[in-house]
Length: 522
Ligand code: ADP
Image 1 (cartoon, rainbow, N blue to C red):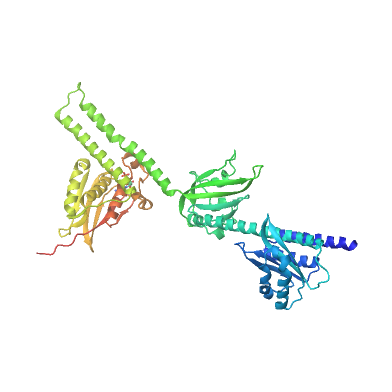
Image 2 (image 1 turned 180 degrees about the vertical axis):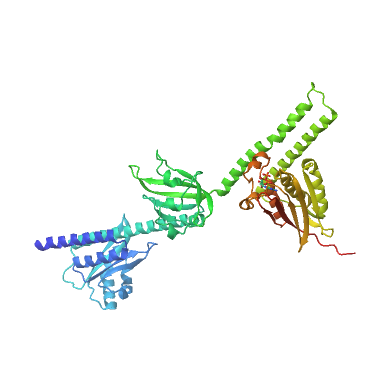
């Protein structure tokens, strides 16, 4: 009686150890090894093995054994081909063959199918060397308990495998996502950082993982405040399901980009943050486009309004029936209207050019022509504007070969440069325009004696909508598009434009153009 209780107690202890091992290690063969070792011991067997069906479910393979070396596993193959219902009838014969093959004293066998929710997953076998004691119903029950444990271990391992596969699939999806994906824990530390995120932020995942997200992806608002620190989207009250943050981010390599980050937080029932997934997108191009549209609109409304109101004012005055104007007054009024209409047309053309450029490049229609003649023509068109205050000095060598360029576009370049020379020389002065040939290209300059440009502004003035902030800027009309178009046109010709200047000492703009083929003397 006492012996039986001890036996039961030991069996409990083993089962407990097995279930502890199952929670501590997910390695299936380790747990199966324990199951078969204890089962053999409990049943006073000499050896035993566990075989599981392979993935197709039609062939048994040995996965663990007790007191049977791996090298002799193949000798047990005939046993494994027996269907469970054949074991009681043919098992003894087959076992005898195996015993003679292996030279092992295998005289008795008890086998029990392992089933998982009614599906057979394998068989557990225990062997004895002696024939004198048979396996009792009690032994069968003991083996059943171990078989149940083995089946649970198989179930756990399969669940673990499928979770692992699912996780690998998820990891691959995150890794290959075109959007930046970042996962953070409940303490705002980064735990996952995908490839797109590395490219977006310039941070490598090794550096980023473990750091606070506000450091790696500090999203700044237009006032330059890091909103991830002051107004974390995951902490905004009331709590939002999918908060969004948008703003500027300075990348690890110093680039400035504009991002939109969407968060999917995970919270405890009490609302505490457990973690979150952030989907981050670079929206710099869209943002620039938006800004351009806004600037275009404000420039259009601001800049185009002035000539229109001047034209309207003069036309209205000239139409008054209660006033008699002299022929000269009429002519002067109409001349102003014509000038303003020209200015309006130029500005509309500039704006159209800018949107065309934004939409993808500039089409050129190049032909050969003499620069000096074109400059002469453009200068003459500025005579009314230049008045008495300006003198023009043109210097082009007689043997300057023709340039190969788009005539109308170069006229636009010269007009913009000359118009600036006049606008930014409040005291008047001499405007010198000249050119020379140098290895297959012409270098042209337009120089004035005006207010000049500070060195730090000299690169900026070629940017779209950029105007130097000074008194003259407020007094002269301009959209900040002239030099941007000059550069676009010259670069479309494969040339270069630059400026040399000192504040108060005038400015000298240079540009290069390709020369046409020199004509051979006849
Ligand atoms: P806009 O004249 O319409 O402002 P531009 O693109 O032609 O635009 O010129 C950009 C800025 O460069 C001007 O606002 C002005 O501050 C500066 N700039 C251009 N040309 C000259 C010049 N010849 N002398 C001094 N400053 C100039």
